[in-house]
Image (tube, helix red, strand yellow):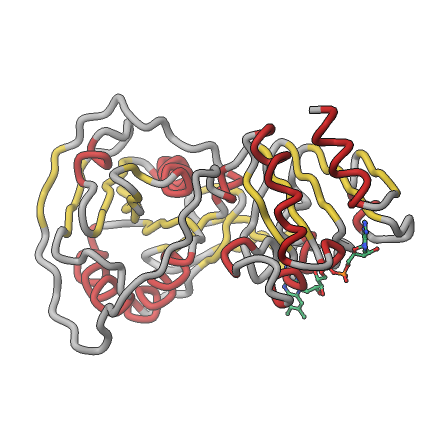
Length: 301
Ligand SMILES: Cc1cc2nc3c(=O)[nH]c(=O)nc-3n(C[C@H](O)[C@H](O)[C@H](O)COP(=O)(O)OP(=O)(O)OC[C@H]3O[C@@H](n4cnc5c(N)ncnc54)[C@H](O)[C@@H]3O)c2cc1C
């Protein structure tokens, strides 16, 4: 059996989430990797990759040409795997449609080559599913698989042409610049909720994040209120994180938020309401006003 893993490259490096997808793909035997745009050499350096298929002409991962290309080479593979990132979620279900197979999204555990575990109902139940499809198309939850190392491998690189597609065009991308660690791979995350009251107060999280080398997250209410950009949202409809330490500040802990962070190793909650549901999952809780607790915490660090 050979699996194909779709790798995402950012600033010349394979994203940590994709290295977790490689770890998952290695359960199925040999692994080939496919990479769109630049980044073939970073992909070739990953240990465990047998062959890199490089598609430099597909610089932006538009779902239509990417899925067409994957479908054209899919018959060589038993499994096609990507991380459950925005890109993986965009491309792989389309590929599954083209192959007439059922995609298995957000896998957290691989039992065997056809049996997978995935969370349902916002993470409140785990479904074990068996796929009888000839080609299994999977996205994996990266926080559930250790990332493969960045180097040590030396795979051969083959270049593929991109198929023509007029269905969609790439216009532009607007990225928020940040020196902080990526939310999904940070070891520490500090998140603010509606209790932060306004966007200016979100800055209170920054000195603490700096000291802890933490990423900053937000609840959906905080995002909807304009306190933080969309890409900072943690939860069922945002990013799924499982850091070593998650500090929840002024957020109630709604079920849809918990879906994105309850697998964190240690959870700390700061909230004025002792009945807030966040305290049910918190290992350490401070019932108190964040406007007093945050400056005290910053000072103590
Ligand atoms: C389909 C669907 C998908 C959703 N997806 C997501 C998602 O991905 N992520 C997500 O987060 N939400 C999601 N939600 C929204 C979710 O249901 C909640 O509305 C949201 O998480 C609440 O955000 P919050 O905790 O910041 O706000 P609130 O629930 O308003 O909580 C604010 C908290 O701050 C506390 N507080 C107030 N002042 C202070 C103070 N001075 N000091 C300390 N504490 C204070 C309050 O006691 C309260 O507990 C989704 C909802 C739906 C229906």
